[in-house]
Length: 157
Picture (cartoon, rainbow, N blue to C red):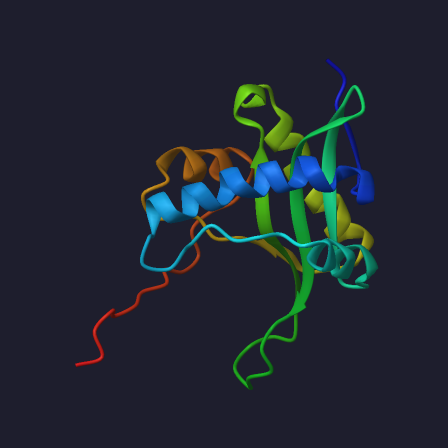
């Protein structure tokens, strides 16, 4: 099984919608207070395809998209105490459930890191749901480590 990484095209949209649905179902399961099942429109995909600072990289096996990573180039906030750095932000990453545990996710991470090198960024970042133990293990195996925790208060009382 040969996996090729390439930029997504319009012909990938239906497969990407299925992958995004699986990702959003996870979001609803882990944090129903924040997530709903959304609709990925043609306009959404076109804006990514046309963007200068983002791409969707697809894991292609036999001409079919079996996974993807949505990468974005971001600049750190302009705050006097922060170094002026740029980052590849992994907005989304998903591999088709029946294709998981075959190294495809790691190939996508490698592609995201290469994307960062091409764009001369300083580091790569993403977020993981606190309850997603498997996801955290996956990212740690691929060189990520916890740098900060995001906390919130649901009550404004």
